[in-house]
Image 1 (tube, helix red, strand yellow):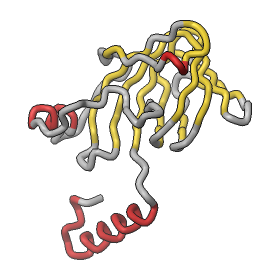
Image 2 (cartoon, helix red, strand yellow):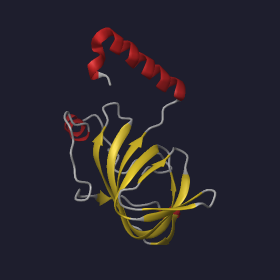
Image 3 (cartoon, one colour):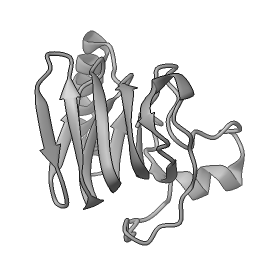
Length: 167
């Protein structure tokens, strides 16, 4: 999950270190069991907590080479809190369940195996009765003209036979 200040759960402070780069942006396929990944404390902002004492923890598994996306496992204990999404987030629930209430008051419940998408700018209230664990792809949003320019550049590069590595 991303916070109001744009910080991602587990964001690293020193992204230039070689060891850090290889541990976050692997050179090969990453396979992980999100149900058994060890997590680090990642507290929810106090001012966002509405009831209970939710304790959150997370672990970044990988970061894309362009540093626009991260794959993260996140877990939280029972509680009710606000959340503001400053990045797009696509998640799949691994265990447990939660109910969210969006800005229009619409309630939705999701549990194991459910896929959920939160576009940047979404504000909602999470209600977790027991515990939830999810794996999420969190993606920086890019200004649409810049995104289109990147797509055009990729297409041109593919047409010049640089292609197979740029899918």
